[in-house]
Image (cartoon, rainbow, N blue to C red; front, top):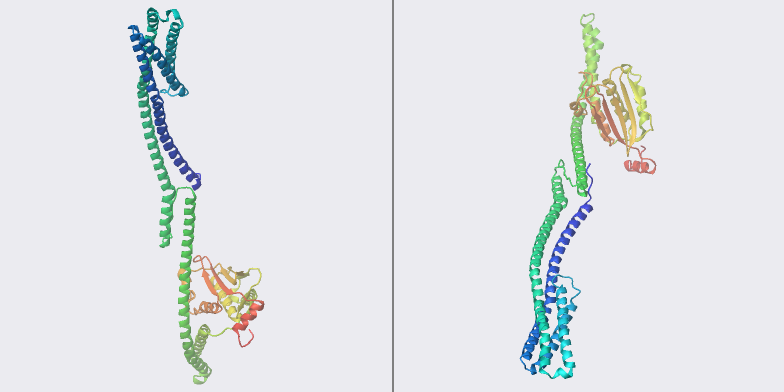
Length: 531
């Protein structure tokens, strides 16, 4: 199973990529800025040196000019030579101070080792020339001799040539370094361009990666969740959201799918309940219509049936007087007896129709349900046609229900008789009662012939029966349904199919106890009648 990646980890990864991108751009930018700064600093530090080197070279040139004039026997130029020597020394000192100011710099362009060495050699040359001049000035005997001055000038001549050569070297060093700098700078800026492009491409790649990851981890799951919620809101409960992000978004999608599945189950269950309640309402309307019809028909039929029975009985008693010894008297007596039995049978059907259609207030009382069932079972044990068939009552706490005991006995009797008729001689019927919330549930289970779906749908309709003609009226379960409904309960039938047995569940409201029962009785019987 793939490891779950939390959104926090993904956000940290995105922040890390963003940090790397910013760092790369920052490093690239600062590298370019500092490279430019170093170049400008190198150039600026040499910019101050070049005028001083030029000034030193001019001083050396002026010193050589004064030397040449002094050799031309121009005595006034000797003083000019000495003053030029002092100016050259001063220019050299300024140049050396400029070199010392940047001697700690370690850049290539700021490296002044060779300049410092040349300056030192220039200083040595100037010191030698100054020493020769001082010796000439210190000898009074030769100070005024032209030959002595000329000798001094000739002595310093080679040193002046060396001094001129050394001062000419100083700009060449700077020129050489500038030439080297051009190659070095060219390599640097090419490297910097490549680095900048690489940093820019890396930043673009990281930005694209952040965009792709943000779309895959945030925007796409949110879009799928929104689309799925709209599909479910439109009634498509079969739609499922599929996310492979393995994070909280995927957990939310799974929870949404579970919720949708639960909604679908609830919707299907509600549809089933609505269909069942609709069938019950239709069945109730049918039963009410049949009840009103049965009430009128029963009253109209009972009188003719009574007349037929009385006439048949009268004829049967006078058959001997009307035809004594006749051969057909026995046949006529049998037919008259059959007429009477069928008339009484029809009268019994009309009485059941009257029971079925009887409306009005039913007086109820708190009744122990299992005790009532036990009385009915005990009565059926002595019925010969049910011999060998067993009825089991599950043990458990008794349940009090607020019912009319006689009517509920009729319900239990009808259901037990139907169950016993549906099983074979070794069959078994189980009866159980239990409390479920604020209701009592009475269950009748048999291992008999079972029912088809079509039979189950029409089971409580009047005159619907599966028995042979003449063995049932088809009103028993209809009367049971009416009685249970009048008591505020409900009856349900279930079967796995033919040969799989059947189960009937009768649900009745529990009896209230104590003050609640007294209040309920007072509300149901404001006149103060006994329940």
